[in-house]
Image (tube, rainbow, N blue to C red; front, top):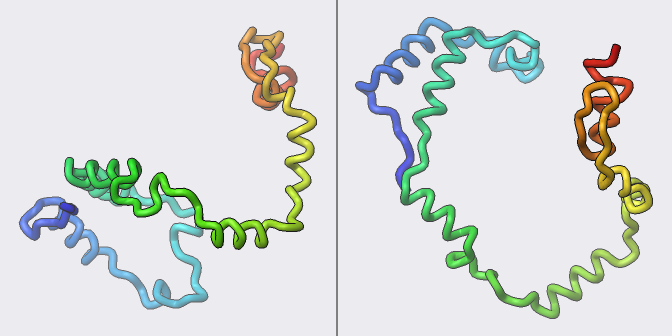
Length: 146
């Protein structure tokens, strides 16, 4: 598996090192009681966003990585792929699930699944869609409602 590692002569790597030297962490950033900057509602600077975007674009899956991922999903490398569950596993699962009730909201969905299956049209913009979504964005909430 090939993973991108920055080259010390790479211009992006040099830019990030310069930026980190210009923006050192203060001692309060290491304290556990301080709130981190990302949680204060402070947006990232344009320079930080640009560097994060460049770093994200550098992380590209190689053909070998893509093939390994594909094989793991296909099951060639998965030891339990296409094998039946053992009786002891079934018994353990049965014991674990015995007496458990489904959540209350699932009963409501069983009775009211017609809301998701009906296709309705908004009288204001003539948009069609499934019932629950249309109730959220159209009818009384439609942006074209007079």
